[in-house]
Image (cartoon, rainbow, N blue to C red; front, side, top):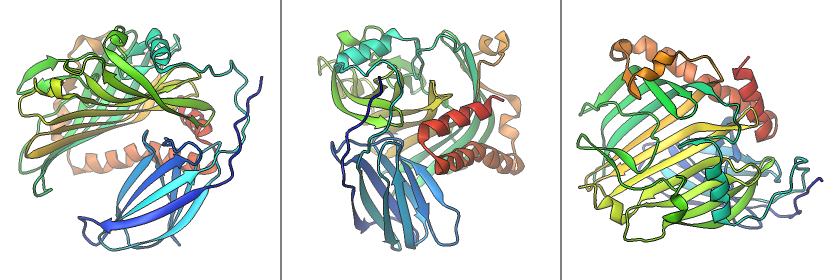
Length: 405
């Protein structure tokens, strides 16, 4: 049976301006919400246009936000659009050295949904049970059993910031070739490294499998269950915060907290599709009890955002890993920009440690980095052009199909 969304008629927007710690450039912070429910809207396409320039396209994160730095001051035209919602258009004047904050509310319109089983009104624990029951490898999730292998390219940058002066005291960037093999094998090969700043940083895995697992002072630790572990329902409380439509899917945001606050655990949100119970992403941080076991660490957080490929597979697209101490903030951002699904992978790839730094990685020169920058932007440029033409799920599908020809 076909299904329609209700119709709401208004779209609202309002900007505000505040002082920014910038040079002569401007900063734009935008937040997209559903006009009826006020729920944050992930994966909204936000297009920035200036006269005589090629449009800049940005996609809101799972919280419905975009943050854009380094914008030239002056008049800028902004359009926000999402399949199933009325587009919102506005014009702003960006000022030198200021942050402009923009709130965008999109009103939904009736669209024809997929002719599949009607979406069930499941509770948050029931959604988690459905997710856990599906085939899963921590940050990777799909309910399809025909996903056997994949290879991906990724780029990771890490920086350490002095919290008092906001000075970047150290940084490193590197490229990754990653491999996955069912049921639970992962390998990552570092192919290029570049350090900058006052300190020299060492390489850590580009993709973090669990926000409650890591290394501090050369000591490994695992202090809490992941909230989508098989027995997580015994340890965590789940509550549905909101449900929004993203293209032809309904995505629920689930709030997560430990059942017993005095025990180490994770706090935050998980996003799950209500249509096929796939993991869209999560934003999780260690609670106070867990931080007590990490000497000198004030904050430990992992944000994972997945992207839908071939209209079926949700695979990692971006991960932001943040650690704060009293004096410093360390942040690692990893972006996956090319996937090859169900490719032939030699067994030898998985006979090595999860992270391998190839011999040539530390000798890459500026020629490599110039070429690499152009290469890693290819997928994003292609996605942007697709998004400018139509709805987001169709763009994902075309992106995935094109990558596997």
